[in-house]
Image (tube, rainbow, N blue to C red):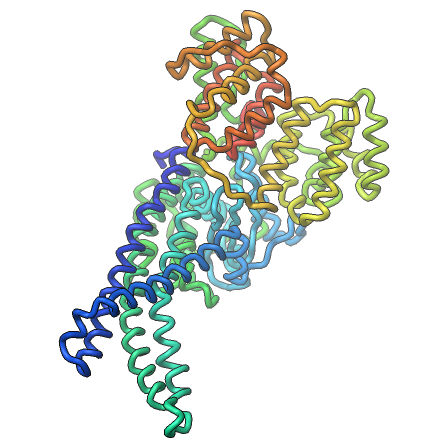
Length: 635
């Protein structure tokens, strides 16, 4: 897809304006139809004057508007709880990160590889116990998204086909489609609410009153008859609203499905994978047997319903488009056994395009800066090389570390071990032994293999541990974080690597637990002081004196901006950096990109981005909720 992550996230927010326009049009149409119907009924009693009664129009506007707005806000609040709510509405059950089931483990491996490669937090994965082949992604943003698949998807698809389906769902996450889908659902629910209320009056309330025993003091039967007629009229008008809602659903969804298919091919460079999955859906079924499937149909990989206003392009049309991209094995009917690990990893480690480079001429320095900027521009996307590199890296890890990230005790022990320092670690050891005795033995076992890894790799392991730490729940996680904070301060200071770990946990775990809603409308010029602190800190990490000032100035020059005076060392504290990035979370996504590009230029000033510089860049990106992979510097 041609649109990058940052622009896509901002566009997804702007898409709300289009939905609001549809919403207003739908409400207005419903109000006019309702007013005309009621006025027509009254005209049979009082004559044409019913059509000129302004109080009737105001009453219809008030009642219909209230019903629609309340229903919309209720559904929006329900769906704003995160992708987990949508998964539960569809009957999904979360797959434990420690699962030993071969099919579930393979699915989680695919998801983890794509998250390591893209920098997006590993999403919780849900399974719907349905024999059909389908999947979905849901959530208000990349940090709070989930992925769901049917049991049939795991049983009938090969690894390549499953990878194509998951890549398709990651595209929806990257490009803000999950947010748009949730808001579309809320708008449709609001527009359809009037019809639902009319149906209730026609089918239940009216008949119940009509069957009551009438009399001088009991007008129930007459009221019931009136409610049946009125309910039928309102139901009919509401059906028009339902039709309009389905039009909205189809209009917004279909083109984005084509784009997600194309993105899946771009990410995996394997059009046969996703095309094969679509072919198997054609020969089996994509139907989801859930009461919520109808209103959430536009979330699915393939349409679960056969409706007049389809939310997805026809399967044959999608397959034909993939054939045009190079798919040539669509006719295959037999899938590999679910546990087979199809080869997507090229021979040998394939490092992700990164920052590292040798010092040289100014031209080479510019080339290094270009690579640094390109790495920021690739945030929130995937390619075959980065997926293969992530898989190869994980395969090279000691089994103890791989097991730890999938175990609640091991995940806590891993984070404690990252905070442990080779010298003066006795106090840290004592803190863990006292406050988390359950994790202490594992902590001692992990310290040595973990110390052999770079800071980049340690952070990637913390990324993978996110889902397990999330499963601890608020109370147990809070206790763990208090212990980790004490371990970090055991040497009476918090260094940049520990700060990077804290920011990693904030993004990958804590935002899922608290689900904060923040503004994202500020511009760089509105946060000039904070930008200055961040760039000066990065420029001075591996440079000093004139070199640090040159790196600082070069960062601003890259955006055609005059550099302000560089802050003094006393202003470049970790507390100042932490406060600055907290304020910068209010930036638009495109300005977050600009800030990270500026910081990358400062880091690459000497034609090399060090491990420390990358850790700080990654930590700033985590604070800004930007998916910069931990292994982007090198694998």
